[in-house]
Amino acid sequence: MNTATIQETAKKKTSEKRVGKEEIAYKVYNNLYLNLTNRCPCACTFCLRQNTDRVGESDSLWLDHEPTASEVLSAVKSHDLSEYNEIVFCGFGEPTEAFPVLVEVCDQLKALYANPIRLNTNGLGCLINKRDICPDLKGRIDTISISLNTPDAEEYNRIVRPKFGPASFQAMLNFAREARKYVPHVVMSTVSTTISKADEDRCAAICKELGVTYRIRPFES
Image 1 (cartoon, rainbow, N blue to C red):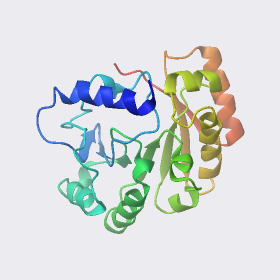
Image 2 (cartoon, rainbow, N blue to C red):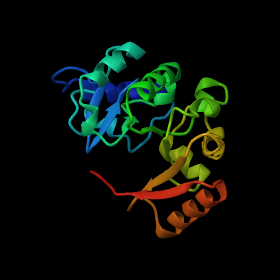
Image 3 (cartoon, rainbow, N blue to C red):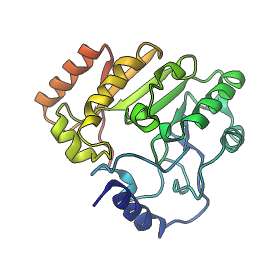
């Protein structure tokens, strides 16, 4: 089963239970999350989209269409930004799949608000866009959080199931190395209890070599 088929099955499974409107801007903890797209080059075995259609205080995150930059900004303006610590690009898809919209929204947000902007990503944006997107992040993104998941390329391909195949793991590492030239804070993360202490140590070593921060995120069921 390929990545697209796996994702479509997950969407059908969760959208059948959908109640309420689709969500572009939604609250998670004290941050405002922006949902740009449902497209993703991965079909992770642990993806929450397989079992739910919402996160935090959101309505359904399955989008009927990809919002324009104007629609995203309109959704942002319906919130009081003084109530939020960060603005985070993170929805039910990979934000760099909608990179032109992301860039346009960032420019408007920087002009209007003081909130720092974070990008949560799988780190495959350069493969997705078929070019180096890192220079375009300068002055737009304050923090990048990249899902490392595992220190092992073979295991990464098994659990993340990227459509780009074996090249994906190294492309993700290359993205992290390059992004730190343009973004003040680059973080790579794994989830606690999902890998061994030995593998956490290997992840920490990878991050040290790349010159980025390693974070172990708490497991959330």
